[in-house]
Image (cartoon, rainbow, N blue to C red):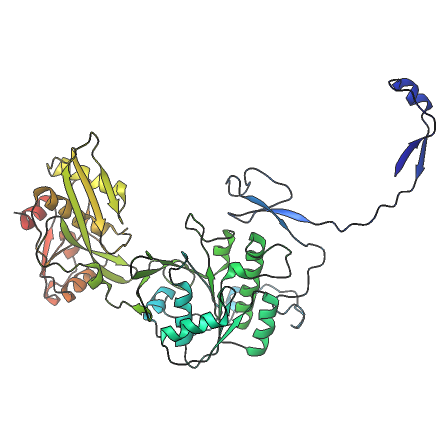
Length: 490
């Protein structure tokens, strides 16, 4: 409505204006303009807010809300079976004992490392997300898996590379021809139209950040687009029973790009780690609804693709012609797999005022605790010494069974004495200097025996219920750190 005054009012005479002003109402017809609806999404947790806030009320992070265009009235037709599928009835709850459950057989691939990380093979209807740094080998890994699934229809959807680029990589991998089909597309609606006609048995999406859905009007890679596209692929996987593999980008902080809810929606989250300047890659599990989250797979990047490393202990132990001081071999467990790793320590007099404590692949706080135990319980003067610790092979060790190997390596470097190359360690060290028992001791001893070690130091409390006659390796039970040093360094 527009208000106009018939009688002019002198400027400043507000009282007279209130008495003499006569209002006339007349209709006003503005031009109808389509209003663009926007909403603010948190890039960390996916929280929605109608206005911008400095701090997300859900996760508490600062400056994570970004504005994106959304459509709430009439979403465009698309998605998995939005128009062509049957009408869905209202679901009804079922009693737990009335639900019929049949154990589904997993699909085993020729990649034993991937089978182990997934918990025993590919689960039908599962949604798997693989993340990693650019150039680490995510696309190579999934293309290699797609080509190795002989006898299965595999649809490889790429939104980043052309068909010619994928063909060049496939020829370099030198894998026998399989029933793998390539499609370059970013629209999920077009993808699902092809999926309904092609009916693949495995679907691979590279990558989820490049996918675009017409249900949301924001750009590809935004929080709302990533969430919507993941929801569509999740519905497709659950309704059709087809396993879906998705590649996810990561941010500069090392986390998966997009909302945090993306990791909650998928069934399995795998992380492909490694240094681009080295040849070895590690496939870790950070979430798995169908198996353990402590498994890992090790690969070697070659010109012909990724090679499985069936015995990683051999590559984690460097080949030395002679014994060196400050080197000890410890036994660790990654899931159900025992690994023998090399611990390297360097202890020297501090040339500066404050001694340095540096560790690579090992918790620095735990290293400081063990150094305090060695100084208090063992009598080694490490307060004015620089201590550097390194785990060979680029692994990140969290198993407390490495404590004894760390203490042995530090003391050997401090005394400048070489530990025999055929001696291994598998025990935890307490604050009192006691050697504590660890789990899965039989697997650790068998791994050391398989690699040719002659002796292994373990806690004497691990001998309860342990049949020592089944091992060919000499088991040295100890209870204190002093017994270890007397048996190795003296």
